[in-house]
Length: 289
Ligand SMILES: [Fe+2]
Image 1: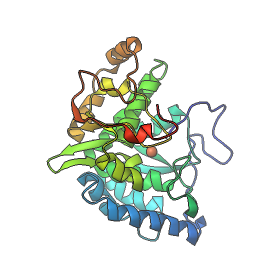
Image 2 (image 1 turned 120 degrees about the vertical axis):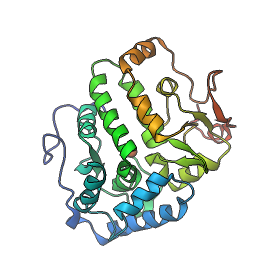
Image 3 (image 1 turned 135 degrees about the vertical axis):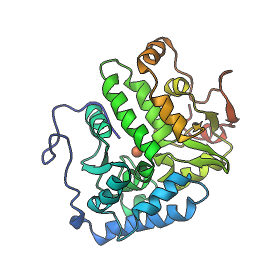
C-alpha cells in the first residue's frame, strides 16, 4: 500500500528505500498465535472461493510453518518461482517508493501484526494482509508480471496527475479483484482473501454489483476504504489483466482527464453485468453513499 503526504525521507532506522529488517526473532509467541488463528480461519474458508493460483501459491510458500513467516525463508522460494521478494517497511510508504519497489519485483510489507482483539479490524495493512493476502499471487508468473507492470506504470504516471485513476486500478484488481473461471467466480484480490467476512460477501452477497472488468471504466470508479465494496470487477483471465496493463496509458490518461467519475453503485449502458446488486447492505450502513 502507499500513501501521499509524506514530508522528507524515510523514518529513523529505515534505509533510503524505506526498507527495514523484519526482525523475525522479535515476534512474541502471542503474535505468532494471531497469525496462526487468522491463517487457519482463511485456509478453511478459501478452497473453492479463492482462485487456483492463490491456493497453489499458498501451498508453495508454506505460510503457516511456525506462525508469522520469516521473509528470508519465503523469499528463497518466491525468488525461485518468479523473481519476486518481500521486503519489510515501517508502514505506508510514499507512492514513488512503492512503485519503485514493485517495478523491481519487490513487494513492500508491513511487519507488525494486528492485536488478538482486532482480528477483523485494520487501520493499516499488517503482515497478515500483506503476506497472506498478496504474496501467494506473486508466485503466479502472469500476475507477477502484472504487478511489476503496475509499478512501472506508476512511475510513468507520476507528474501526469492521474495517480487517482491508477490507484483505482490497484484497488479493484490487486486488492478486490474477482476472476471468472469455468468453475465460477473466484477471488484473487488480497483485500478479500485476507478478510473472512469479505471472502463471503464478495462472492455470495446479493448487495454488490459484479461487473466485467474494463480498464477505463475501473479507473473512473471511486472506491470505499471503510466497508465492503459496492462493486467488484471480474477479469476473464489473469492474462487479460496483464494485457490491459500493457496498453498505451498516455492516451487513456488523456481521455480520463476529460471523463467524469462514475458513481460507485452505478451501472452504465456499456457495462457487462454479471450481478446487478441490490445495494441493500450499503444502504443499511450509516456511511452509505
Ligand atoms: Fe494490500
